[in-house]
Length: 304
Ligand code: HSE
Image 1 (tube, helix red, strand yellow):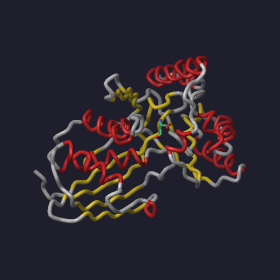
Image 2: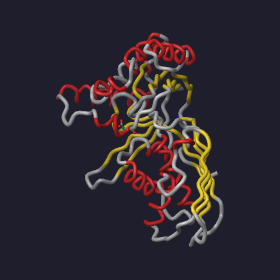
Image 3: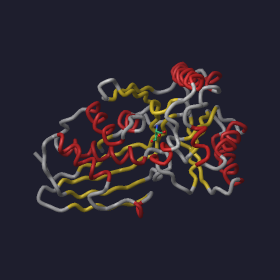
Image 4: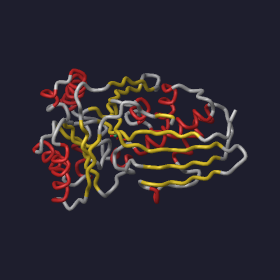
């Protein structure tokens, strides 16, 4: 049954890939979108959007939050064409910080709560992956922490989350321009050389082991990638210079955040110096940017 009660949820932004963990590793960050949802079985669809990207987010049935609400209602065999939706967005839009994953998870989490919590988080993960196409942002958005996702042989996603044994800071350089995940995926090759695959398998494994054991020494080699960043570099002016500047200012490593164009550095100290070095390196390429210093979110999506 649909009750006309207002549900509020909060969902973290996320950074995916973390260098070598393409489509597999993601981290929830302490930057959040909030959503209020009231299902209105007899009413109309009214959507208001405030904050990041408000001018570019459709306020009608094309809205990704609403499409996610509808996705869950269909699974629950509930027909409801009206709702009041209020989005307060803090996650930058189309920048590689999981804004679409946050919107999808917010819609699913809120709709689930509105119908009495029929689905568990694993089921929400399956629905979110169906909508998003890959699990590495939606999984940490749901579960929090550093999340390792797989798509199983039957197509269903599964994941494990953990909190690293080191106080990792995430320093994100956010350029002014946006980049769609679709464009950033369209430049990827169909096949990769075997040694590039080995390069990534070893680093992704090392990254997870080092985070679990708190080995910062070995982390320095763990954020490099050969599978996607070399192909995407042409889309982000100065990408490797920004990585170099972050390391020179004390970062353990740096990577493309998700499909970009945000670039992210990982560090335990010097966060502001690293952020300033990254934005200065972008500026040398005539790219205006700002930086955020974020921590890992351990909770994932929450009903408030
Ligand atoms: N793993 C995805 C990619 C994240 O790099 O294309 C983007 O959302």
